Length: 203
Image 1: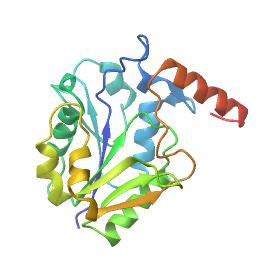
Image 2: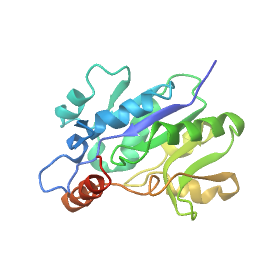
Image 3: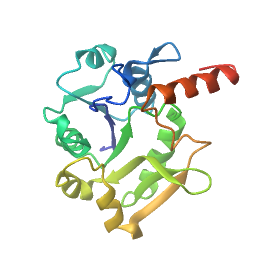
Image 4: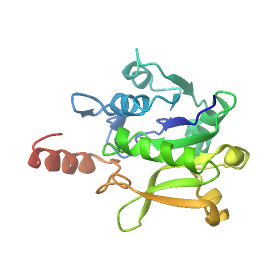
């Protein structure tokens, strides 16, 4: 039986963090990258984490987890390079790839499972998470027939042109709150996230 897979994109430079690595920041007592990988693994589909060649601490953060790590040797060229590296490493027969940015700590296993369930029901659809009021965000699940289009991307594009070219296949799936939108790129983002978490009684 074939399945979709989850591609965790974790090869970015973290350039807006003032020297800190956003994917190694602690959330719920562990590095964010490990937390996101654990949530993905809990869906029971194959999980691949795409890493840069120059950040060994990210690979260390994933040590012991039953996932595949993929090194994007040309990660500095932009997000498309990471996406191509991940797609090239997918198991044969993979029916779709869910693109999961590693810096979105509100996305839960339940959110990921919602897209996977919908993929089984509508395997030809492009599935994109959104907010309750329809703002499109992440993750995005692309069916396998679009892999060649994604492999042809370049620069810092994560699939926008593929989404734009096939609006009739796009299905938006609402996630709770800001799950589909909140990413943490700067130290200020992290400070606000932690302040909000403390105010709500948890991180």
